[in-house]
Image (tube, rainbow over all chains, first blue to last red; front, side, top):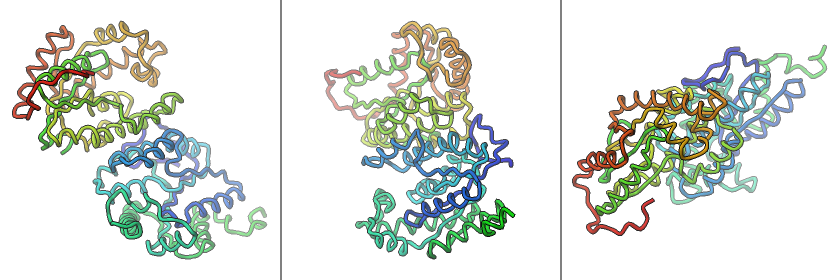
Length: 239
Length: 233
């Protein structure tokens, strides 16, 4: 299958023959992305598919640098967008494309859309962001695990977790307290994601349901795309 | 404010550009000393110097992790961080900012590495347009002679070794910088950079630099008294 980039692309990267599949799972922290990716990976590997997973800021090049920057106090929106872009470009060139070339299914825990959204709610220009990320490979499918911010807050706190500084957009100066900031920030992100869902053709998944239901829907979608027999009971698939 | 549009701040931004060995850093250093002696408040910044990306750049170079795109992006990240922290505040308060290299360096070098010119211009769109950009133009022989005269070998990326043009660093440097020079000449026209003949003597060039800088600084507030030059870089 011929892969393509959003716009400018990557110089010298050969994407003419990438038999693998790039699948993206998007959604806020606490929505269950990691759980669903692990379940999908186990399921797909059980059926003999080679699966690689990758996620935001996991690049060998920038992972440590971004962590350090987030611990500091001065990380402005433009610098942040560019640093995340470096991370993503590194992973696309050095992890994602090689895996796709070898026929892997690559499950990406978030992708350009998260970083574009973070920049957009901090006031960066949409066109600038879209052009900046023009080097990104267009994924085959993007599943957006959608959850209302109020439910997101309860889910996070119910587990004994805390509202994260960056996930609350505390740097954006939206509100005087953590709760209000989180709620405001996540609402802005959600609005941006909803717009993006239309523009980039996301499959929107209602994440307010239980893990089993959400996982079943993801599997139905992937089976329809990869191989319908994946949904058959294990015994039947080999008959 | 954008890379093609001047800022509205009270300060002045003066930039030097040119290929390696063009003598631009020497000239900027002399200009800084002069401006300080004239009583101006001066702030200096240089390409690829932000502490934010330092460890990442070091890791990338050491382990050879960079591609043209990530190499370009990490420099843009560095520029954005310095622009926010070391460039805009002094301009906003009315100081002279002296910058060793600007976005034009990326437009020239990264294009030679294969990055799309339009993508590069978008990348640096957030940057401001300098009040004066002095482009020190030298031919490739002068550049090679200056670089190889001072040090044993040009550095890996400076020589464009990542492009695989030649396994000999000096040959690679010559081939790479020749291409960069070609890009600079196009950029000088596109962004109306002020071209200075970098082949002349240091003194001759500095006299021209001061003459060009004078009208740019017109109306700028000075600290009043000439300051003792404690720390010219």
